[in-house]
Length: 230
Ligand SMILES: Cc1cc2nc3c(=O)[nH]c(=O)nc-3n(C[C@H](O)[C@H](O)[C@H](O)COP(=O)(O)O)c2cc1C
Image 1 (tube, protein in one colour):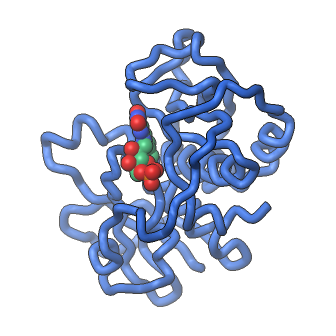
Image 2: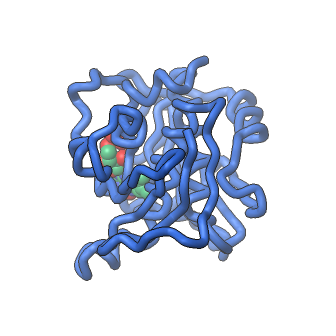
């Protein structure tokens, strides 16, 4: 199982087979996953499609319902943890898709988001088939080290991340959306940043460090999320 390789071939799956899945390896993986912030409790349920209110035009046989204590950078933490899970699933032949439109039927104030998943036949692609911003648009200068973040999935492919080189890594920012997009994306964009950070972690597992600095330069139109060493 190599999670890093999945970054360059993965895609969101919206077409699933009804095959049953043995959940044990997924449950094991989640129990040992690296968080971004180990002070935030999270938990999850595995649901079937009849336990979910479906607003997307597609559905999946299974859903991970993700719940978290709502404090600090919990949205980034959820993105960071569960993108590793999504890459793990992809590595064992299970497709998935982050699912912000659907919701759990049993209301719970800790609920954050769903990930749809299931067996799928077509779940990889060539790197030339990723629709992503140029590297020069997601950083102060073009840097191949950021390819794993560039390829990360995000809500309506908004790619709201920006990486500014620092003396020992990158300061990471989230793009402030205009008033029209803000309403839709405000809950999801911090998750997207966590997802991009998960890709940076998976691609630099031995050196990755995340911290939030007190004195970081303000960037017009951006919100500071934290800094990484890789
Ligand atoms: C937080 C989040 C929420 C998403 N919600 C939905 C959704 O409700 N329906 C959907 O079809 N795709 C959803 N997506 C998938 C994105 O549309 C997809 O990741 C993006 O278009 C890039 O495509 P790719 O994942 O195939 O690279 C979501 C992705 C993220 C990260």
